[in-house]
Length: 547
Image (cartoon, rainbow, N blue to C red; front, top):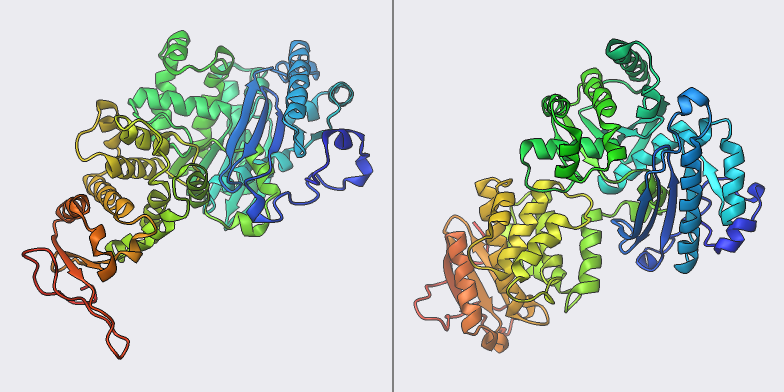
């Protein structure tokens, strides 16, 4: 956006704004944590305002509120906006306009989708909203809605490759993504409100859905390994799938389902009392009323496109509008690492220490793949963000930070891996039953590695306050099962009793022998070496290079 005030936005003419997004707000990535970016999304079912803040590449939600107005309910039958929905939507947008002024927002975008673009009274209602609120509304077409939703998915999944499906009240959009780009983007009338008007009973509805999907397949193709689901109805189905499975981690973003699980969940929902399902999951009555039709669409969708993997995205059109404004340099950043940097900057005692800690521990992980090193780096950045929590609950707070926080670019196994590692940065044994159940999502190998990382964080974080590398150097010899610490001579007093205990605990967790040495003074030719250890029982150095 161009950074105008709300008053300037309201008074500016349409002709001086050739595009929906004229200039990037984050022209300087160093300022990305300072700007609030607001979006009002006027959909067929809900009206929501989100204000993003924090690390722009993995935004936090400074404000997030929605009302299920049902603006598009009955549109297929009357070709007009729902009267009750109009009244509720106008009242909601008036509230949002006042809140935006109270926040001094200089960057606010309001977009409207299927109901507003298809209703014959949509233009008149748009004029009324703009007159009553002083805000400008942009009514976007179907392909643009699909493109922005797909960009929302890319906000959380930079490497996403497959088909994005965004379902609203009156439409369903598809877009192909890959290589960090949005490719084909199309819209369809497969929103639940429209499907309520399809004649012919279950067979007529099934045939209608199949015919529309087959036509869409001709445009977007059917060779998509992954399907990314965007929209409240899909999220409701995913939440119900969690309930059916007894899934312990109630985080919808990057929740994975299989086509077989989707079929089972559809059948399970049909056999349940909707009131009971609402009580179990907290899904609203308005949303639950759309779930049966959304299930029918999803079941046919996975049959027509045959994806191997189905993922839920909490990011959609609103995040896509934020993504639209990012410069390429910011888009290229890792959303997980960006979020962790921001959390460290805002919450840790010594911002910047996480990078030093990662470099100090890196010799333990030289042969790890990039995806695992990424998690280790994230853990180092987050290792101190919960220091204010009460000591009795600090370990649990660490676990909850990563398993429940709004973190993009992180699947559920990655969340749990980070949670276990950070928990063991403070806790040496035992887990509460709730955490133990969630930890079951990890394999035994990954759990052991996460626990080892926690021991490494526990030692490295307290070894030196100005960076552990100033005090010593770690070397690991996996074939010989030796973990070696080479102490700088002038810093050897840092290796006190607690440090020694934690270093030994780390070596024990790794199944290695602990060796401690003092670095020799620099020789006349500029070289240096490790001398005899001050610790009793140490053997000669196993060498300077890992096996």
